[in-house]
Image 1 (cartoon, rainbow, N blue to C red):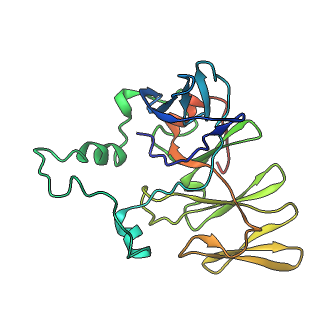
Image 2: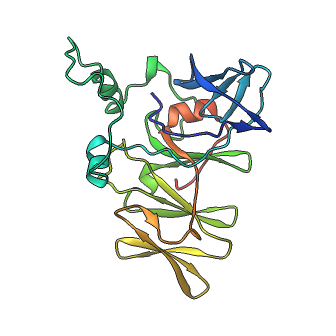
Image 3: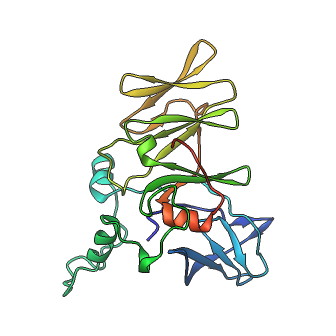
Length: 237
C-alpha cells in the first residue's frame, strides 16, 4: 500500500535481529516483528514502536530498487529467475488488479486520509530522516530530470524523469561539503572548486565517482508518511 521499497540492516545496537511481517499495519504501511524480542518495527518511521526494543532505530542499507520486470530485463537480459511457481496459473480474478487500481487512483487504503493538508493524500514523494528529523520532497519538485535541495548546508540531488513509472525508484545523492551539483545537458555533474569530479549517467542513474554519496530514503505517499511522521519538513514546495 505504501509503494515503498527499503532495506534495513539486521544489526542494531550490537545485536542481530531476525525480522518477519507482523501481520499488522501502521497507517497502511508494513510493521515488522523481530523473533528475538517480539518487538514491532515500523518501516515508515524506521524504529521499534512497541516491545523491549521500543525506540531503537533502523539503519537503511543499499539494495532496494523499485522497477518493472520489463525495465530490469532490458538492463540485465541474462537475469536468472529463482521461482516461477505461479507461472501459468489461472485465477478467476487477477490478484494484481486491486493493487493496480489503488496505485493509479486517488483511493487511499480503507479510507485513511492525511491530517496534514499541505499535500494531497496520494501525492508521491521521496521521504527520509536526517539528523532525527523527517523530510518529504514531492515528485513534482524534481521529476523533470532532477533538482537540488539544501540539506544542512550540503546539496541533495534527487533525480526522476516525468515519464518514469511510479514503480521506478527515485535516486538520491549528497554532495561533499562545499561541492555542488550542476545540470549539464540531459545530466548532472559534481563540481568541487573549479573541477568536475563526477558525472551522472542518466541511463544507469549513477555517478562515476563515489564522491557523489548515495543518499538513503524511499518513495511513498503523503498520507502514509505524514500520519506516521507528523512533524515533516517539506522541501521544494
